[in-house]
Length: 251
Image (cartoon, rainbow, N blue to C red; front, side, top):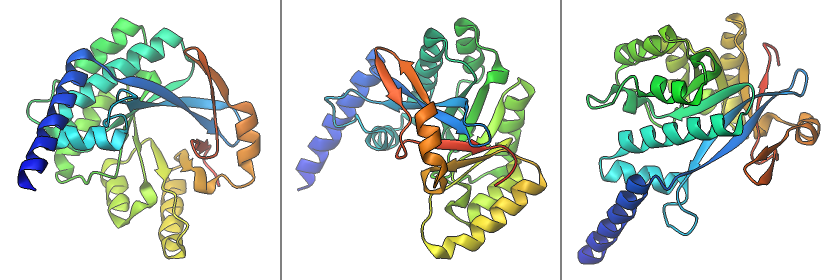
């Protein structure tokens, strides 16, 4: 059993090596729609591995990178390719880039490359939102604050994903004071008080709130009908399952 596991790990590492060496990452752009006027606010870049690979799924891809100590390398590659494709497609509005918080704190993280990628694609930093996901906990808040403030000083804005995922999200919001927040998709009623508290805190700061599909309700049809965009050679449609929406300052 151990030999089989080791062999699978080795094969996974080989697949990851090939993906990173060849840049075999595809980027999709998920529209973020304003519920206030049903217009597209920006696009979230979503990275995928090769379609014929076990690492096609972003979950599998990130897990493999984590197992083999190459998370920062993968994060940087995904960021570079997302910026290139965003510029190539000449998409309007803002670009949301997902980032694992711990990656920004690694000693070997190559700072300054994001600006170089943007300059090459002719995209100003004020059109880019660095989105921190709460799926990966933040262990050093002072250092994380320093990292996010550094991005802000260069013109970027900061978004916090999955604010409703747990009480740790409230601390992250309080510590980092993001420019945007996104509420997680919780149907369980035990999360309602937390979501209410989250919304109340955010409204006090007059922040835009990013919401996931669980909160779409009656707005889904209107957003779906308006949010269509040609991406590459195919029509990328906003569906309820794919949707991330922003409601300007109010629920």
